[in-house]
Image (cartoon, rainbow, N blue to C red; front, side, top):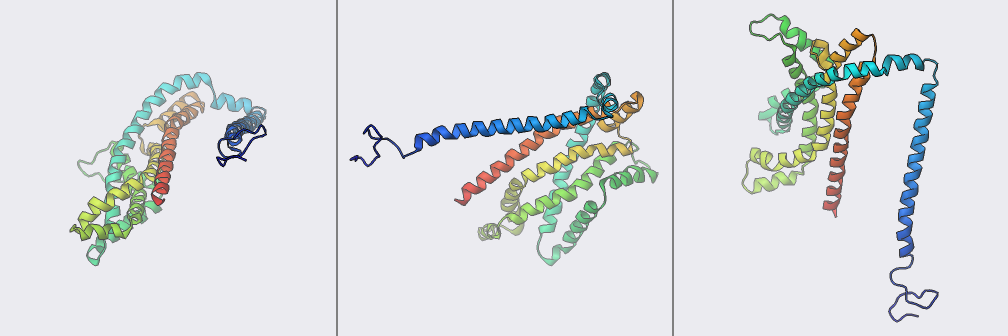
Length: 293
């Protein structure tokens, strides 16, 4: 028996550390390696089966020529990438406008008291209407309806109507995200701010809104990923962005490969944004778990 309280091994020497500790330390890397190998092999098998089924389908030769033509892809890709700059402009301008308008709508819906009922009512009606009407219809109505009025000074360029339509559509969704963040702040925060002499609006501005905005950053990124993709909808009113450019090239080449090039561009842009969103969500969860301890 050991005077130090530790167990003895078979040679009579004192074993340092808890029983089974070194074995567990050696076991964890082996388990991780085995899990990784199983995941890699299963993934390769699944995708291998899908590829085998695809390339052995009766119509694969025609699909390959129509959708995966290397010559058409090489010739069309530079024009498609150049047209994507217009999508980026649409996204950047609309995003700034959406953040401002949606925050105002969320604040209006969060104002208490009967005196603010008109603001709450209008903000609610706005969110309900633009979440109910399909985005394509909003784009059509604005893009063709307003220029059709024939009013003097009304621009005929479809770009501003595309920005306005995207802003109106996504402000309705983002305002609900903001409002959820505002309502997630505990009422005691406002009570503490009021006890320090801040007015209701000051408490909203300096205490509630900073916490609410910080909490809704991950879902806001999800909405803006959707906005980035929905910029292609403005092609219906004549904006020559990436999707419209792919349509023009497809009709000129009688080949669908430009659509695959467009899809590749969106994949390259959207997946990093999705992974950034996942990282932010995981960080918020760790922060919430740490604060709950």
